[in-house]
Amino acid sequence: MDFSLSEEQTAIYEMARSFADEKIAPHAIEWDETGHFPKDVVKSVGELGMAGIYVREDVGGSNLGRLDATLIFEALAYGCPSIGSFISIHNMCSWMIDTFGTEEQRQKWLPEFTSMEKICSYCLTEPGSGSDAAALRTKAERDGNQWKLNGTKAFISGGETSDVYLTMVRTGEDGPKGVSAVLVENPSDGLSFGANERKMGWRAQPTAQVQFDDCKIPADHLLGEEGKGFTYAMAGLDGGRLNIAASALGAAQCALDKTLVYMKERKAFGKPIAEFQALQFRIADMETDLQAARVFLRQAAWKVDNESPDATKHCAMAKRLVTDLCFRVANDALQLHGGYGYLSDYGIEKIVRDLRVHQILEGTNEIMRMIISRHMLNEK
Image (cartoon, rainbow, N blue to C red; front, side):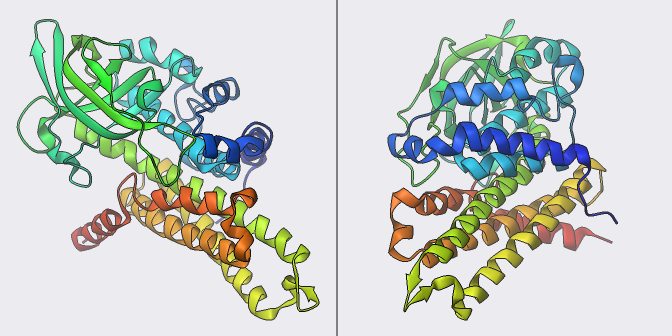
């Protein structure tokens, strides 16, 4: 088994990392402090092919694999996990349209998505249904040649700044078989938004409720087939979990790299703290954790690319393991910085705050354990 990256994959990582170093990292702390969403920077990734990473080329996509995508999001999150993760969500929506939409839908929506002319948000979670996603209540009723939507989505990245909302709605019976996916354009009559949420982390992207009050959309905005929305949503989340894990990995690597520089410069008891064996052991464990996380993540991505039957289980395992390890590494990096790590100037406390949510979204890590154990018990 070859664990090395190809020349093309190395070039992909370096391209995304250069973008992060030049366009994202220098402003990340300021954006976090002011709550500024750099829409112009986010849109500019379309020029580099990072808005339709695993979308087919005939509609402007890059047609790369899931392993390639993990390299991109690890690199982007090195600059800021909030921005990198937001771009990941847009890519997930693009992939769902490319995979499950009709040919007419692909041609209508994706050229503007892959160029990042339009930004798409993903709307699944509701105030009363988070982990129990199949219990969603937002309803869509057929009204002639339109669908009429009523309900509320919660914790939606992008808030009112996005142009399109890929939304899971109930068009039929209770449970997963009654869920469909629709595309809602902004603005639309009956579409409104709550105030931006005040969050612990991910402050450089807006998060808000999305509300539908007799919101009418054309009938052909139903994505794919009626009643298949929950299947589409879960398929999208396999890749989304890989990307969220990759984003955690990039940010944790940044925290460790900052720590190594700090330890060589900071002196205590007459010598750099890098010379203390106890602290050397700490960074050795941090490096080992990140390398193990990286290998496991890339294996899971390989399984998705090769349509392995246990890919979903491995995506859940990777999401759980990588996000837990990376949060711990970031928290240890703060500890090794001492009091300076608690100050915003060094950027460490921001990484800790940002990575905390990676253990919650795209399915909490407790739900990941449920997915893993179900697969284990159902395996013959």
